[in-house]
Length: 156
Length: 403
Image (cartoon, rainbow over all chains, first blue to last red; front, side, top):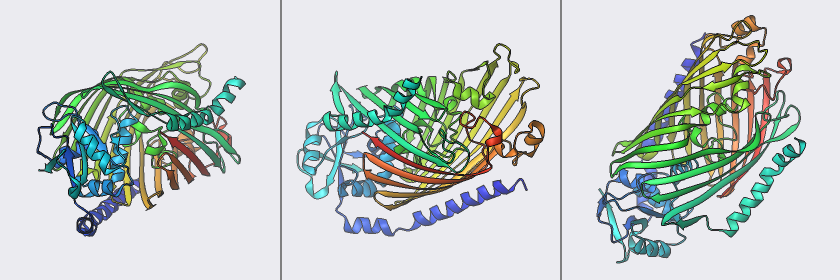
């Protein structure tokens, strides 16, 4: 009799796991994302020393956890608004994180005193200008919109 | 007193207005001595109505507006490796919290180690206690899945013991291809300077005082596939001593609480599943013949699903269960020993809720709870045991603003 809640709990956890695995093994949304949406690239201030970055480190930077480039310079993160299509595409296809997860990660850090929000820009033009002029800056644009004032970072 | 409580009641309204004004007038981020300063805050107000029993004020067959939260924080990143942050919080919650402004956290964060693969450092000051998935931002409506967190694990009545502690915390994070591993170990003095924690543990009208030893807190969280999976484990140890007051019927007793929490979360694009399971070993000793001494293994868990119906709408379904003593789930042994109702030793809560983000700054929430048991109710709002009812419903509305 006393075991029943424990069994119920384990059963529901297993259900979660099964549903989760099913959900994550469905490849359709990702394929569509890559086929229909424009390719996004990571851009950085040209003075930064890096040409490539591991995806895990990029997630830590965009999640406002990692605050320094390996060469010790401070990182300055620029993002478009949560509802900008470029932000959603960048989050999903480059970071492979849903935008609502990024928002939650920022909120959790800001409201517990462990971090800050990234700086918001309202357009691609502003993104390019800010990344070009701010030391240690990192951001993203459509691959077709890159100009010579910013450096493209490849994911390794 | 009356003036003060009236003031406390309008505080959230004033704060809401002030925050709205701030939002329109000033930039929330600026430079100070070459470092970035950010100011943020939130304010919320709620209406609570219960079919029986009181939750956050007098809600039994009436509408209580005695639940509000207002917080303002500032962070100053002096250098890439040093950040100072502090938050002031005013919280009203029935008779358990009076809206007095207090320091929620105030800390210096020093990231001593940092590389592409990870970082590590030290936080010193008043630090939010790592406890399950939601505790560090438990009073911020936007970071919660519902108006109130699952009470089986995030008790409102003993919240002060686990909300934050004065001391130090070591943390380390590793960012790998397979996922991110974060661990923290804190050692600090929990807050026992309010009556709320004392009443929850020893009851109303006790002349003595409760003091806590320094408490260790350990948490490890693994995030896989860019955070789609989060698995966590938390262990906390609290050791509290009761100092009897003048004419006290209780003796110098001791509480030892050791909660262990296992957490799991999965995020898909439009839905999330979350579950946490807690074992709480509680030892109560030396209080004398007029108290329920003994060692109990408490058990709590919840399973929660949220679904984003549309970009601004989110629905919630949750089952949350709390047992004060797993060897006495229905409270029969407790009832036989104390002549108090057994249903005060458990609570099983089905919750259905809806969230509407009117704008990114303004959120409305509604939720309804169907509860069997009164295990998580606060004595301050329900002083007469004979008035408690086993089966009760709770209906809540909340409006929240942030900047």
